[in-house]
Image (tube, rainbow over all chains, first blue to last red; front, side, top):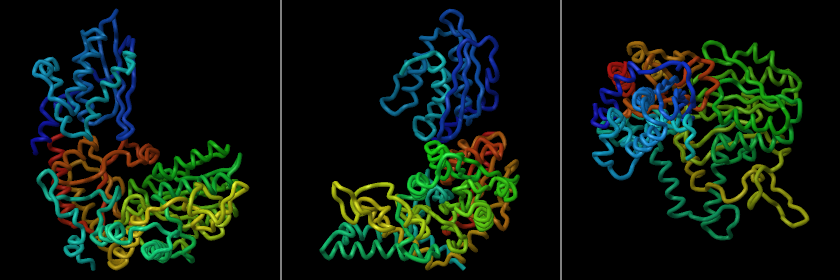
Length: 146
Length: 408
């Protein structure tokens, strides 16, 4: 396996691909959005339950590759317990982390926790959107204007 | 017999490594690699005969015009057309379909008329007809496939009526490699609707099988140069003379006119009526070199080589645990191995293969209705060209074994 490939399919990614968390319908969902990548046909439907401003539960469904599935699974864990504003801030940090540009600071990287496992797409432009697609759904679900 | 070792030497792109591995290029159905003869022909047009066509009074323009128009004759012979004036140069197959939809279609299709397209079409032979039907109040009807992904002729016949104005069909499916029964389709369509026009998209056919537009009895036939080892941005539309003669221009500009005044413009005769503006001169000359290249090797020799590879590929892929080939090779199959690995997404397959130097296509192949018919979101497609070898297909099968180990 090449180093780039090993960076792309890290243990955490493969584990979440094989055993995605919060996959399936979400009861009493208050926010929902679907993101679609016309290039590959992948879709992610993300559902959230908000209590006041806080995300108390998250779930996803859809058909996607290992990176997309792992990213969605990690997303549901990372945003649960955060406020909507905080979750959107995390989405922005993830975007910066996987996009070309200046290396993220160690502090910013630390804040991402397990989401750091998605960093392999930084070097593989054709797969970047696989990792960010669930986060597009998050933004849409929370009504962020971009 | 094709001497593949020698032929491979004609393709400079093959002599490189990708991710530290020798390139195994199995994505020629997306775009084929270019032989030195094509690269040199294009380069020559920029380095030497760099002039506009049909306009100049100087030597370079004469030379460029002669070379450009010579390609029309090559394309005529290549497709078995009667007259070089039946050959229109386009940017590719997509532009050719749009030309017919916009010119022939807008004048010839009205409210209540029907346009039939097969379910296996590439989006490029579907969306232009959808746009036309929406504009003209006509109905677009997909004609169904059987369980092998082949056109179902009896159900096709049931959809035909005197209202059928256009039938559009691929000669070879880009996602599966199925050779469609074009001759039967034209025969049935003409029997049901005397005025029908039949367009055949030959983008995936011309690199692999000999085409005779008169034997197929189609009104229009198109292909892209870049899938035939030629430059991108080149293509050919064949149209029967009486069809082209009755069609209005679709783009206005220089080179497509006889005379222009504010009172009115007289259009040039076909094919120039459909070639507004300065064309892709160097690219088209490159396409001519590609036709020469393929014909020098011989389409029969190419087809025999590719058939052997297809069958070898099917055998070695069958050894990969769980792999399902969507269409095992049969008589009506060319150059494409499309497969799914249960539990592994085609994009992951494509990425892992890429890191072993193997280029394939992954996804829906711009044929979403076909994917829906087959009940898959997408496939991995390994496509075969004249420069591929059995060793490369063995490398593919071995790498797929690693994919399964890693991702499932």
